[in-house]
Length: 416
Ligand SMILES: [Zn+2]
Image (tube, rainbow, N blue to C red; front, side):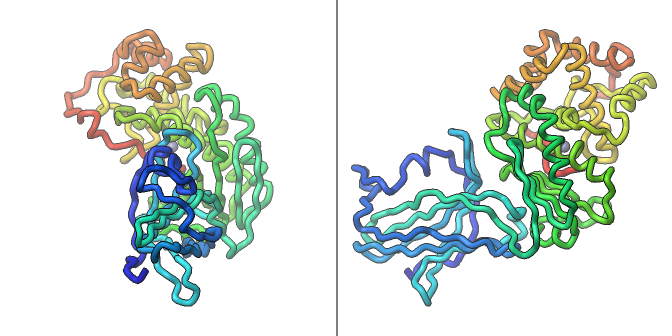
């Protein structure tokens, strides 16, 4: 037992079913790797949230065949779709000298942070000196914050947690989600297979408390929201003296936008190509906002009539950016693409077809052409003319276009 290593953190990706869930050790099997439970005496596992300091897992276990020589604790987001890849945190185990219990601890650090109220699953893996192994059944719990007061509201769309904010914020968020439910489901063919968690802070100190991996350095880029698609959590902070208008923007703009990023992560998770431009992801998310802080389409139409509309589908390098000096350009132009699609195709079917093709890992341009029955040149021309631009995309000085596999992944983490 003393040979057990100090707690260290490793991150591995496992395919669900193949490695963990397919072989619960509670079954005796002919495989010599898979031992009988006869030798094992294992109590129910315990876990404690010591937010913001992390998680402490405990297990009392013995084998009649020999001392426990290896033990590890694995924790991860509960997985709801078969075949989905999950990211697993592995914690090594120590022995509590007072009780003899196995203890595993996760402490947030510069690599891994977790917002409060994230839903976590875990199990233990044990091996004794005779080679018998044992795996506990997965348990699920919340990374609860017991240090301050939270309110919690739930609908069929989401669970909202709020601290230091007026109670009506939760109803506002759930109302906005209910209003867009049919649109999400039309575009993706169904709802998210889990209840997303929306965690809202009214106090900036409370927000910073858990953000151990927030490497923001400049005041101009302070993160006020982050979406954890790997955990299905949207976290936002509202600082100062938020107004009714700010609450409404949070519910009817930001949350609806971020929820669409969760849909993208969920339903495009099988995608192996990195050829989808940022304007497409952000334009799609923006399409779900019910409130606009300015007239997005009006801005793009003004660019079009001034002859300043950049090319959209000519090359990834020339496409409007969603970062750098003018990040909103990519959002607004991307939004205009989805709005054009909705208006000119008479609904959401074309939008849904593109997403379904992307979910099958069809190359981005091929997905557009198959869904719309036109070449990308024709698509670009139709979209431009609808906006009031000239038919042909401007010819830019040729620039180096990175091969698709070098294209950076779309930032999907930051809120507005
Ligand atoms: Zn976004």
